[in-house]
Length: 105
Image (cartoon, rainbow, N blue to C red):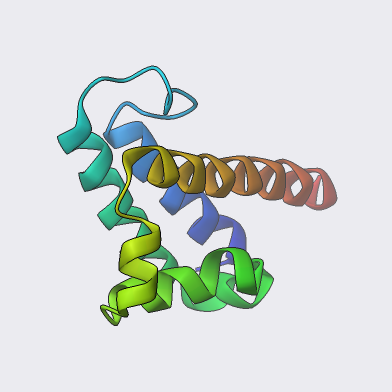
């Protein structure tokens, strides 16, 4: 599986939860929490894509959350912070997939 495939796989998680590009237009806190957990797991498990992701912005926080580090759990306890984080990941992956597809064609 390529880096592009892995990025598309994570973007598919957003589509599954019907939250692709709509993170701030939702009143369903439970769905946002589920999306957050799913994306954190996907980032931690993304293998070939991980070296291409912003380390301090995405990889380190996701690892901290997975490891139940108190500082990271506290940082992401609020819905707005989770939504902002998910939005950043979504935007990065959309740009990454668009840029990668241009290089391939």
